[in-house]
Image (cartoon, rainbow, N blue to C red):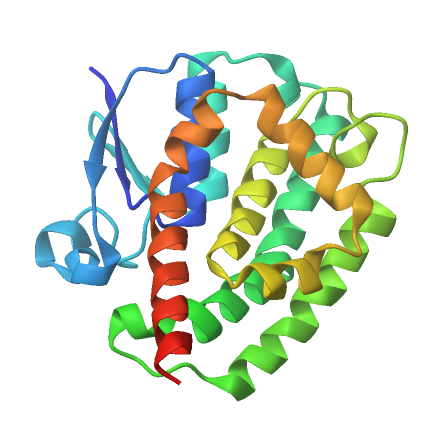
Length: 236
């Protein structure tokens, strides 16, 4: 029986799960939960994920949420290549350390900044400049840590590895959310971090064509927001 992935392709961790399964030939059924339409708040979905967030995984009678836990479970359950989530306990612990750092640093900064500058109106909420400014501080500090610490070593990937781990995939999907920003704004934020930019391209290349295919929805939203900004500027 195929594992069920409850996802929204505008969700960074949802995309990571989808790409991981596609890249590793894991049989799955995609169940779309559209956050903008409030589908994550239904009683039916709450029975799957009481936190009412995406993604979630259902494997037979087993239900799991939190994206890093889901990635690790799918890696172990399907015997994927070792570089994704190493069997060596010390190497695995290093991947775990990046994943733990991600949620309290890079994710908090990137998701907070993008939501409060670009995506809030889609949820019927105003953009929040103060929250955006606070999130930007966290985002820039996190990019600096990526550049100077996590991307140390001879390899092209996190922790100096020569092949991507599930941490690489999760973090790059996070940073892809910056695509919905105004091009100049995205450039201002990320262009100083040359190692980060190269690493992102290396991760994408390692898991094509799945990376671009899963990001199609994000690219569509990017173009839609770009057109809206152009129309608003023309009216001034």
